[in-house]
Image (cartoon, rainbow, N blue to C red; front, side, top):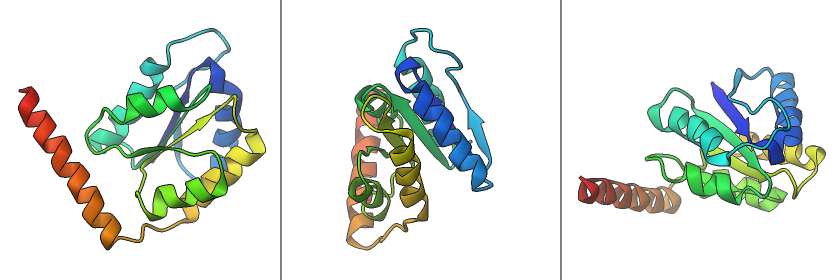
Length: 151
């Protein structure tokens, strides 16, 4: 299952991406927001990141005005590798080199058409493993060390 959420700055993009995902036959759960009223992006970023971190969802997509805030929130969660993408190259590298399980975009940065294309590239790309897995393992060790130190 895939989960998606946005704040008010990403609502239009979220709705367009949701339709793109449905057209691919994917199971998607929308965690909001559902209207243009001003909301706090951490509330929605947390929902998606928590679902991916816990294993409830395999992948997630987050959208805020720039994508920066949602990226910061999502990457606070263990096991979440959220990547902010703005073009085809970063969308492909997010998967091939970083095995990103959360894709983040800016609703005030890219168009719905570009966003749907970036999602397709991310979904259709394959993680290359090898040296990239070694690097992800190092990130996991850092997460573990930070978690232990916080106790």
